[in-house]
Image (cartoon, rainbow, N blue to C red; front, side, top):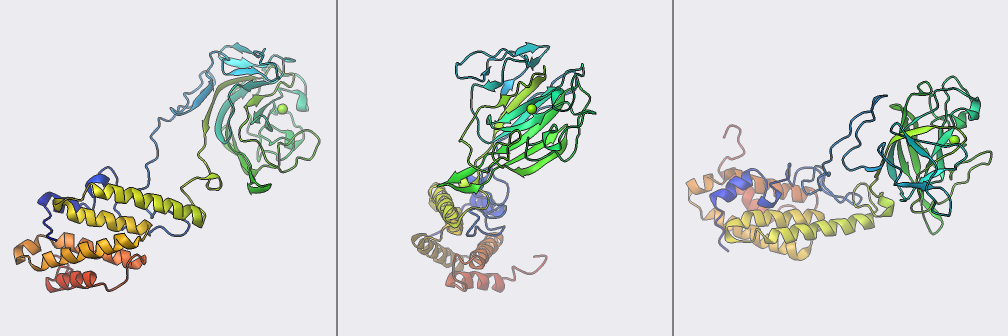
Length: 397
Ligand code: MG
């Protein structure tokens, strides 16, 4: 096979990026290769880019901030169309909207979202009544019920102590907040909550679930393990949650207000089929097979006489994920033809290929290092010989 890379091809080669990777930053054959628990290489240019979103803006006491662009907004100061009464009758809630906040009407019952959610990032701001009434659990009490089950306590604990596992920011009845970072009553307080429900399979906990709570910018729960839904007086028991549930706010007899309520569903975890991160060997194999197939499919677009070097490299790249014997044999043939072609080039034409040849030698080294190919192959030996004969590894050349 004759290989005649065009100038454009060589330029592309020098940037170490094939046409299909132009949008990616970074190079293949660079960081440590995929292994039995990681389907991606370190600094892998094939790894998907994180979706771009626009971040939100912070709130002030007078003005709620803007949610991030990918948030599901549950209440923006307008109406309660996403909410309903927490009963079996599909009734509208009796909570009211006043001055841009939704307010609990004591005695009307909990309010819940019409939609149901599983793992979420939740942002919510709440304010206890300015007029201080009652004490302990009786002052400015409400609650954020994640999936309608676990209560993150909402309570006016500003100069108002109560049992610690019922303090604002507590996983109620389970875990007190690390600190009490509350503002005075009447002011808005913010909760940013990261909630991961328990995941069970055949009665076995694959992941117990966790909750993290940031109160007014201060961490008060850090990856606190879920021990069931918590609750009043009774010891909560570890166990499964449903897949999804509504977000609820509590009516505890106080006109607590809420504003700027939004959520962002969180990505799956490895135990429920995520394909990134530290995976089981089985999940890693499956993902590596998928990536290799994607790269091989992509390589076909480069399969023309002018693009043989990028084609060869893209195929080699696929073998980093899955060392397929047929593809390895194909690579061996391509490499042999490549070297045969180099050997026939006049000195000036060969010199013009210096960086390309050295790069392919480096790729061989990488593939040997990660046991994709055997060391000391004929192609590798020939490349090293050409480089040595021309003193191409000398500095300042
Ligand atoms: Mg409460």
